[in-house]
Length: 153
Image 1 (cartoon, one colour):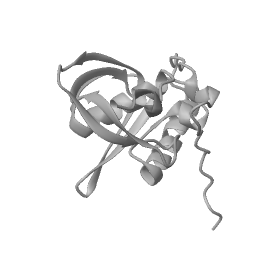
Image 2: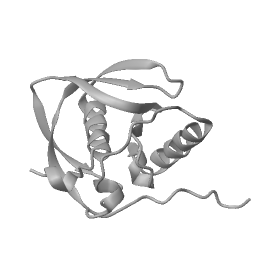
Image 3: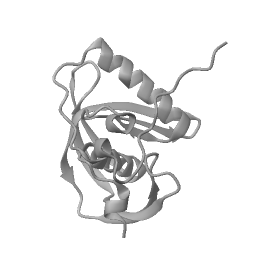
Image 4: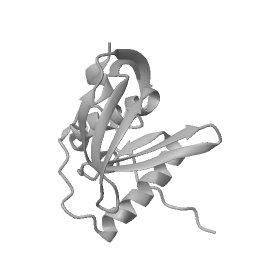
């Protein structure tokens, strides 16, 4: 059986695709749904979250594949917007698939509320805390052209 081809992860602090603010998705097409499936596969194999620009697509889209016990929390976030944050911020170490071999202490809100579309174009709200809130903020930064090397404490 041939090895499955995985999309290339964009890397480097000066990579133009990683530094550009991503575009809103106007319509969720079969191509976008295929991209989401590919992104979930990559995230499950290599990390806990992945933004579309990390695989060369300048779209406001990210996926989260967070292990919780023996299961995974898997979700797709299209055109996400943080609509509320708590006051408390916590510093914790983060890494990034686009900056291999680099980690930094990053200050993030511990709680947030996110508004987004799911892959069926339904409006959703999510209240997140802890690691999920951190992953969401990390991926939101990607969509805005911000990398962890810009925010290190």
